[in-house]
Length: 351
Image (cartoon, rainbow, N blue to C red; front, side, top):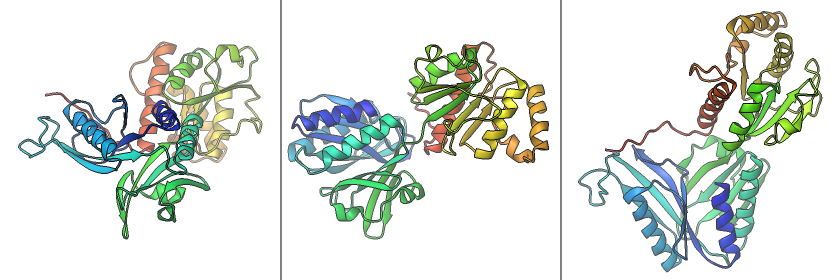
């Protein structure tokens, strides 16, 4: 996504228009979901995808028409057999695509796109909001905590906030006389990994490749070595018994506990349960987990609080080696993130 918006910004900065295709609604089985994006450039090239196949061809043709007319428009792509717009697909669904004409001369547009790129790069919680009550004269905003940066019909952006975005399901919605589209662009993607052993060394590059930002913490200098984790955003040596303020885990973060011993796991989990991160996973055998649970119960944590942790960490795929365990943990984090972002489970089966 960051690459797509970067290319879009560069094109507009060079004075060339483009059309951003966005899947804003869907019904039934479709190859791509709400929030899928594709850009049609004036030179005929593309970036991104809204589904592939003939439905994408139709969307691209609509985008080219918008470029020629210098206007935005909605396009409905029907995947039902025997429909007048039938595209001979077996999915049996329907997509609504907003073909958004982007004029490089539009005031504030480049600034909004630059802010979107920054939010995606920094993985800060942010949303895209569009007022499409008038599809030609739309308003567009990047919404972050305490900040709304917009362009277009700015008066239409009144009332938009991070709280508003959280309360609205991704997609099209009607708010009085206004028609809105919103989607989450980025959720916080920090993963704190306590323990710098073999599993962590296998896990960090995998998580980095799928858009997570990793912070590794170990109480041993030889494992708190940045050279072991070139893809990590930060590496700290810290006492597990009393984690320093620089280890600023928040309720928005993900936490993976895999220290070198039972006591280390207990010390970290005790402190993390008090913070209540969005995800808390603990590696280890059921015997070790039972030992830690007993100590945590004695500390006053409830059984429900402890059982809410993902323990043993990772999806159950019979993983044995550090590399396999890393894959199982990454898969679990993908599933947690997808649910957090409201992405539906879907599988596109070719006929």
